[in-house]
Amino acid sequence: MELVEVDQQPDGRIDVDDVLDAITDRTRVVSLSHVQYASGYRIDLTPIAKLVHQAGGYLCVDAIQSLGAMPVNVRELGIDFLSADGHKWLLSPEGAGLFYVREELIPLLHPNVIGWMNMKNASDYGNYQFEFQDDARRFEPGSYNIPGVLALGASLEMFLELGMDQVWSSIESLTRQLCMGLQQKVTRCSHPGSGKVSAAGSWCLPRPTLWASACHWFKLSRNWKQRTSSS
Image (cartoon, rainbow, N blue to C red; front, side, top):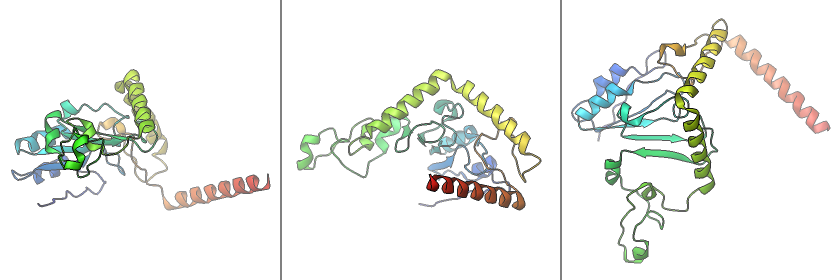
């Protein structure tokens, strides 16, 4: 097995053409982030999915920076595997996430941990006859994080009720306002209106501004500690 890495551009983004150039007829899995953590750039997955499928491979996507912030349609984007945690844009407590697998691909995934919960024939455990569940339970060998799963489910229901188009429209508008307000004070600010930038990302502050902000925060923190200790 050979791992091929695609380098970032100077501005921190991953160029789709670089990903496409790295795909060959020997490519079996392309794994990438839908939205890049540091830069906030959103990758166009459609041409990547098309080419990797033509090569007989699969597309695996980390959607932790996009799920809950913008519409993500796994069928339209051609995603085979998708993972995300609930504690970011989905506004759910830590400790529970989700893993999407295209249904016909589930038999290809073999859990490396065997437990009471992920076997069909748990009663035959002592006879070493293992047959995994056909659904998501095959990846849960032990007791479920029931509070975390229920909280994540409630978050998903809330977003579906709100409508992801409306959620993304609001986030995009707020991010655009933030960028416009910071353009005179930061080194780099990517505008979300281009369609390539999400609400996630970072802004590069000039060093004097960063130092002043750090000193201001230290002063506030110190004053707060003094007030709480004296009370």
